[in-house]
Length: 432
Image (cartoon, rainbow, N blue to C red; front, side):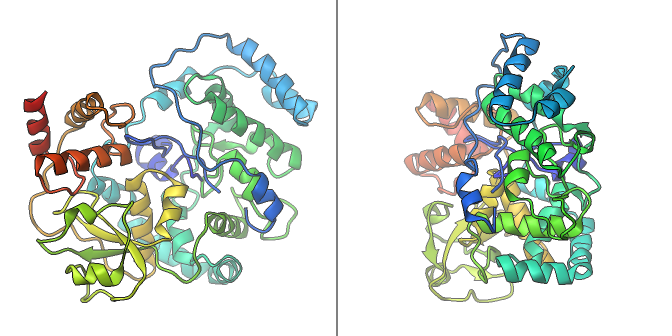
């Protein structure tokens, strides 16, 4: 789960991949409790601490670090027996650090990413699961306001309904990442949360098998979110997000509710855009009433757009010639779940499909210009030299890169759709 961090959806396509994101692309971003407001108040921030550069070097001894962590965990009330049973003899796994440093799943276009993750099989299984567990979904929606399609789409993407939860020992992964220089602060908290889950009796250490980034269960909760947001929805005395369908559905609904889901409102709608549009308004940070978008010629796939005052942003993940979407206020929840815009649109659109919307279109039929990963890294480097905060040049099209691209498009007189093109790169090369 996130706000997160991973996406076991990617796990199945590329082998336990964590969906994380940063200003330039993707970094783990943790997820958000429901019934007990006091527990929600005590929850950790949904935004993870900033990560250090992927090239940072570890300097301390792992065994020395682990001894200090054990003392810290005991001081926070974790049982000494739990600490000894789980961390006694714990060893560093360099392979986990290697996976973290080389994440590349998000170095692909939106259409490529969507095609791999939002497959026909996941869509069809999502529809089946929504019908199969209708009574539990209805109960969760009544309590938390979150539709079955929204929960089911996350369930599909995160683990293929439990098929791809990961096969690595979570405690070893967490200890390794907590020691590592890149995101140690974040994962120290996650390791403590995992130990507290064991103390609470929800899972045994040997049951904590999951993704390389330490996520657990069929909707892939980081341990801190499991600890703070998991519910015993089947009333068996345990919060089991690995095996219990009621617990999985109820906990996911409750967590989404804490991310400020708006009951009864839409989240995403694919639309058609006219050839002439104030393209600089196509920006996640800009919202207009649907009536304004309709006035500018934006239409639904099946006809006219509902012209009311509901605020929405226009998203063009592959520029003006690619698929276009109106993102409503509930779409913000998807970005709290996972900060990658590509993942968020994929999850949100799959949910609309499960709820009955038509299949994704490929855009307006015009060629979509594409830059390679290396070209995007070059573009990010140029933008960084010009003072833009694009994060680490990594070939991932994150929010910082999109904002910088838009600024340069406006400056150079290009159509400002926030999408990097070979034309823009060529123009910036000349100006270097």
